[in-house]
Amino acid sequence: MTGNLTVRTAWDGTRADVAVRYTDTAQWFTLVGSPVPCHSEQDSRELHQAVVEAVRGGGGAAVPQPAWMGGWL
Image 1 (cartoon, rainbow, N blue to C red):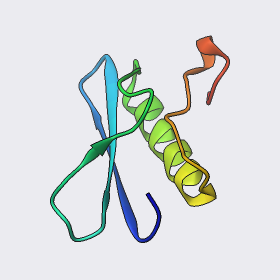
Image 2: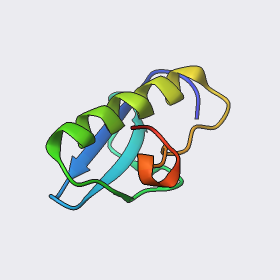
Image 3: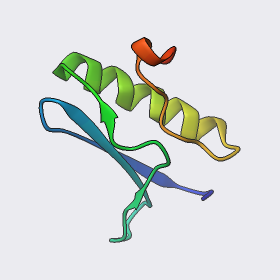
């Protein structure tokens, strides 16, 4: 996906579900790697920012993995 995109990260207390859509459309697309284990609200915010940066970088973004998997924290 390219263009003007919106990222949504929904945290349920144990994991984060990450999706993206074209801005001002209704259909969400789950990113590869979602859901991700996520144990705090702060972690979910950091994950969301990491996803936003990955999407901005282009080239087929997938959800960054948590630190215990060698990823984003």
